Length: 409
Image (cartoon, rainbow, N blue to C red):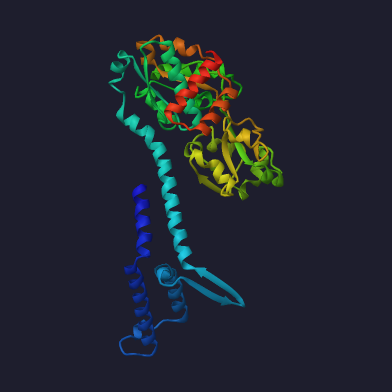
């Protein structure tokens, strides 16, 4: 895919080159000269005489290529039809074409990268060096691609090293999306990370309806035992998905919940990160549950969402319960109610390797001590601090240490 996109980009670059400009204009003039001479009855060119309809078709066929090729020498064209003037800026047309190719290339690459992350782990198979690492009392903690995950990774590392003398925690922040981290734990390339109940049940096609989180975690472990993955008790904090709009626009359209959104979706632009678009508990299931069809879809990075909304590029996007903006900009933003209860609960829980639990058995009970110790309010506050102060490892470590001491954990 990337190769094809590069070829397309090179093609557009060639269309704007001086060589192509000269060639296409030269060919056009030659063709016009031949047709003119044929119409004048020059011997030997009779076979090139054409009907008016054929000549018109030739002009229509050739015109787009001529416009693209001449964009560097002819900057604009003005046409007057029925008293109305049409002005075309060819340089702007060329810029828009290149910009669109670059946008597709960037966003397609982003989606491919997300899928490739887990593929490399699956191809590599089980990490043969993991047992040696555990014997040296070294473990690797992974994290997903969100600010809250920076907090979780540093918090778990600090907690374990305080409780277990001689343990050394290496952090991989971020380590990719959900599937990448789950695959890494299964094949022991990392030993531990924090995921969410609502995400983890998608790995095993578990239906969350009419079940408590306790029941869902039990089912997760029934499946996880066979593949060497263990799901511990939730930490007590949730980070649920929600759909967000500018309040003014939502009120104009009469939208307060996702059912009402579905009636206006055809006129709106929706954006989310690549992982959200490709999951059944997210976009794929949501559009089926709510019979929702947006006018335009845009793939974005997690960090781009609010900027895209503010510039008017998008109308609706996916928010996280812990986004600082949802709390600092309450008057400007509207969180749409999930009136059909589509999204499951995304309660955070540690996910670790069975091999780690067997080699270093003291780790699991220390992690279990954290069950229910954190609140969503805690996470919102810490994510806000990271967003303001920065997510440099030294800053994150200091923030986590102050949090542990303040909470007297």
